[in-house]
Length: 264
Image 1 (tube, one colour):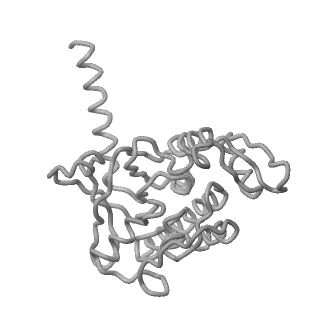
Image 2: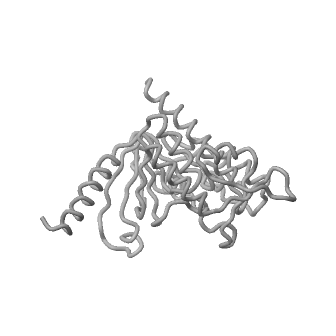
């Protein structure tokens, strides 16, 4: 066999095996931002079969661009232990005690590497266009290639079955909107629907992101900015401590929920 064919066949076989295994999951994340990467890593370390579906070519969400393309972000002191575990460096902000800057490229790549090495699978350039919804529970995802969706090509999707689905799509909270609009479910908010994100208020936005991380319907969770948007929280800009804490909280909630599900 020609070397060119050996290379091609190896890629096709390995990816086919990975995707096939990724169609039956414990936890499926939609969106590969910081909260999802942190949560996926923690769940994978617990032995749960976990995958992230990210429509962009590069996972990492809003971390890469830092603040207005200045590739630095800010975190608080209470997440430094997590960064140290991963090996991400930081610098103290001289005039703001308890705040630190982090190179956004190092942060994004570090979180991605950490999730993959923990055992989470990442499928990039894949869009989620719908959910699987059966017997009053969100049971999985309907996936397609992101370029297919972008070009509006008439290509049928495939499905992923998962015990838990996590909306980590950021500001649009796309998956919870699909659940509300297409499945016509009432989620666990004041109105039963998406409340919408408020303007920027850093201190409140950070805490609300963590507080809003929750299971909003059986089998359907939200973390990061998706959770903020669902509950009407404030946005916070290029500060990411709350996003990391949201991911850790999401992992704990999901692990507890799945353990309870197994006992039924």
